[in-house]
Amino acid sequence: MRESATDPVVDEATEAAAEDGTDEISEADREPNDREASDGEASDGEPSDGEASDEAGSEASESSLRIEQLEHEGDIAADYLEELLDIADVDGDLDMDVDGDRAAVSIVGGDLSALVGRDGEVLDALQELTRLAVYQQTGERSRLMLDVDGFRAAKKAAVVRIAEDAVKVVKESGEPQPLEPMTPFERKVVHDVVAEAGLTSESEGVEPKRHVVILPS
Image (cartoon, rainbow, N blue to C red; front, side):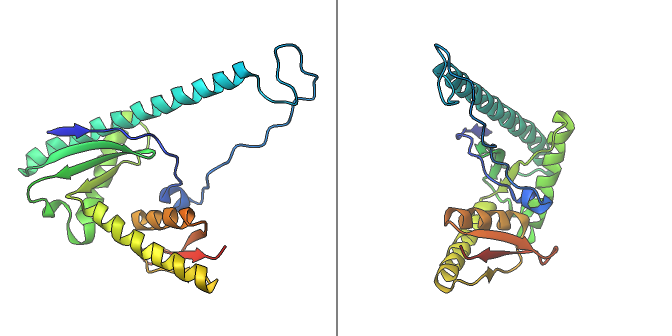
């Protein structure tokens, strides 16, 4: 049985992007229009009301299209996972959602420990297989997040507490604070917490010892 809900799309920097060395690109400052404004045009390079309205409409349309794409990813993932659960003879319900700029699918109910594994190793492998199933149908790389029996949600809450404590230490000491090695998912959570606190962070080292260092402002 599936249940789905949709949250507004919120832009967030991904750990995958951080690992690849890419950063979010902010919009370049626009040069003001040097021509004198004619009747019906805004002066000093400012967009007219009509242009602003067109931009807002375009952004809303793109946002709606992106949500539809993510919901489609969730549908593909759910079909794949339903078949997998049937083959493995495991009882579980599927919840689908859109979390930020990624599709999110959760398997809940029943004894699902076998789908999580030691420290989430089986869950990580299952997530990659699900992303591959989405890619085979869409031709685009998926950042879909899979959770089983609330494992990732609980892990995220624990990492948030660790990050918040480390942020306090950095603010009080003014010194960089390295954390213990973490998975890409956990490092992403730390980066988000640090950014919300007004500080910066970076990932250092190589797997399996890659870790986050929180920097003072």
